[in-house]
Length: 346
Image (cartoon, rainbow, N blue to C red):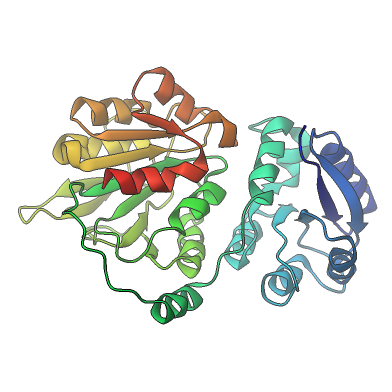
């Protein structure tokens, strides 16, 4: 039997509160237990009703969505995941920097653009299961206070990790990347499908949560161990290797292959798979379409490792599915097991 989660819907429009509530109540395991017309109303009802998740609009009187979110992330007595349902994508990205678990535009939800209500329900369920993550400064302080003698480890036999993701990716990436420490002996490149201007806020958001450093990749940058690089949107990111054995970022406006995506997972993987060979780990996470299929085929051809997210935790089981069904995945795993699998491969 599915666990039923309580949802608080926050929006200044009575019509939108009812519409969103009807959509959520039609899901198999979520029920609206309350509605709020602004941030002040929401804070009071969160304390009283203790919902499993809150859907939040931005433009509201008395206390708007962003100010409400800041309070919930910093001052509230208990952590509650927040899912933004708004009209403005740029503001939604700002909300994710502040701590929102995910977002969707009202037009996408009401008109079911790009994906179905089932996909929306999956994204809500992923958000519900997100746990609070301490900020980087707090994590470093805790690590210092509980410092132990380093465990002697065998030499790392990998040089590079590449992660590809699309719809549902930001929340999935947060669950994985926050587990890495700054002692990771190799770099990570993330290729996340996003509109131009949105990848740097994602990098800043993850950097604020992680012990490991996270940044947007820059032209001619040398990849360093213990750092996560996010490929910028609107341009193709490829990798080269110099004579010293360092991986270097090379960004191009166009790719040699035909692709709908900028950045493209295929473009990134095809640029480096023959060079990195068996020393590369590739992870394909949730997303629509088949970006990553051609790249993973090249990764396997040259001896690299491919891990695909399993259907049970994907918001959209598209990209991992085509990789798995093509026989290219060494392992297919739920999101909760991917970090441990990466570490075991090192």
